[in-house]
Amino acid sequence: MFLGDDLLPLLVLAFGGALFAGSLLAVVKPPERQLDDAHLERAPVGRSLVYALIGLVAAIWAIASLVSG
Image (cartoon, rainbow, N blue to C red; front, side):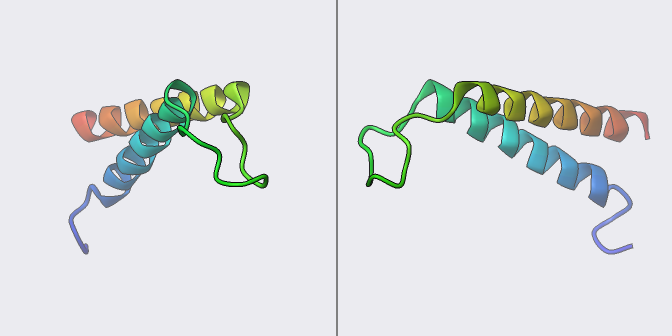
């Protein structure tokens, strides 16, 4: 198989980790200035935390799949 048998868990780990880190950083460290009126000053906190939780679950699941398999 192309790039090994663990390609799908590695991709889920990468995307889950990026979703977790990006969503959490959007809440913790918002941009210093607003670009224009079309962009929000801060990320929606509730939605960003839900996305961070989804990313964390996906990353943990991928790590468990890689370790067990």
